[in-house]
Image (cartoon, rainbow, N blue to C red; front, top):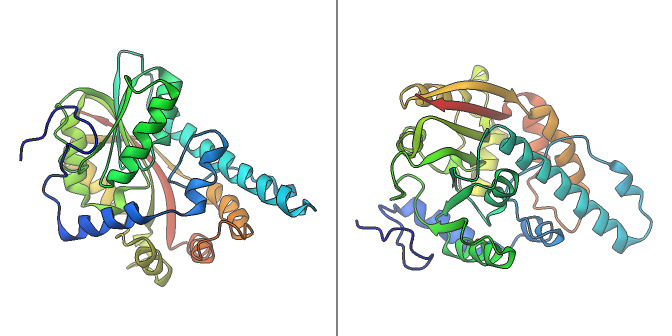
Length: 292
């Protein structure tokens, strides 16, 4: 399938789309979850991932109901932004001449964070044309649409130029694809010595098969969470050499504890995440790898 180079959102078809990928696209095209939208309204940085760090639990003691909601929302957004900044820390050193790739970009917050940090160009891809349109509009409002672009494409077959990217990442999006196909595409896009980073939830296969909680998370997000060991095997097969691995499980628990108390933002999956993290069957990892 021919893909128009660097075309706008609507004119670039998603190549080789499976029935499952169509379901994923439909899910995110229909998604209007307050936990993904209300937080982003604070500063027009829309993150589609979770948070890390110690939470300010004093927000729960706020007496005024409206103010309480506002403070909880702001605190959750702060924790999510801290996660995005941690990922960006691992991409560098980058310069304004460099180009980076955001695989599974959601509504675009991660690409904006990378651009604001390094001045680099960024290309994000998502199966959702609605998300890509939203993210491109945000880039236009910021006046950075000449540097930050979003495309409705398949992250496994992007049509973007080989070896053109200094860094690339997946932020909580690897569970929607086969890892070998994903890492092969990242290896193709990255120049030699380029950096790949992922932050992801994975099940702890030293415990055996996926736990009941992991199965519930899969059903909630129509995804397929991979075992931890699969990441390292697939990276090794695709010229990606891990240089840093960080277990963020303990660091993300305060985010989930606070989110569980946010009546205006809860999705019903919060207790499942907390149980899985606490019983050791589910982990939250950052993996940085260099392309050789």
